[in-house]
Length: 251
Image (cartoon, rainbow, N blue to C red; front, side, top):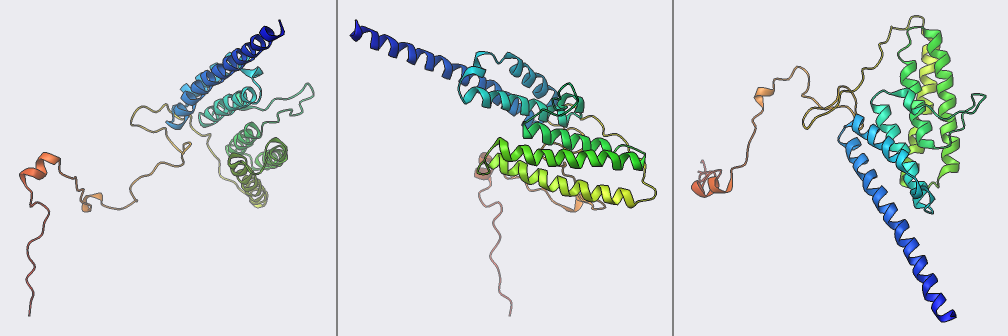
């Protein structure tokens, strides 16, 4: 009996491990699609599919280590897509009944702080902007506190996020000081929502990859010549194309 029980238990363990790994692999495939949509600037699709993946996580959350990582990845990716769509209410951090922030994910906290900063820059009243920037500075401080306890400094993603939070913290302080000293601040306008990108067009304004490039201002682009390499059959028809003639020495 004992000789039959051991292989049976081993088989059960292997089946459970295989099922857990299959669930994790299926979730990773879905998350890869969400990351692809985010990288190609399809923010609306990344937001909706990221939310769908997050809501569909069931047994996957119970997989040790992998389940928690997948859940965090889904939330962070969905929040990033919401941020770049200027859907700031969708990335508001979790709060308790007293209004205190209970969110511990540093990625969510950083996006929320960035959103609060961008919102403060759209307020016409200078004093209101200064008050909002006070809250923004505190939010970046909370990001750095959560960053230290959420992951080790050896992880590249954590290091990059810590640097961003520290830089934004200093920038928010300097901006607040400048606004406090300014007598008349210009009226700002709210940022426009990013349009959905197709295969060729980019959303308006800054994107996840930075500001879109463009030709230099006041430069005549007609002075630049575009050289297109010849195709293989064209090079066979004119094998001497592109070769210069024999140079004649002078003197």
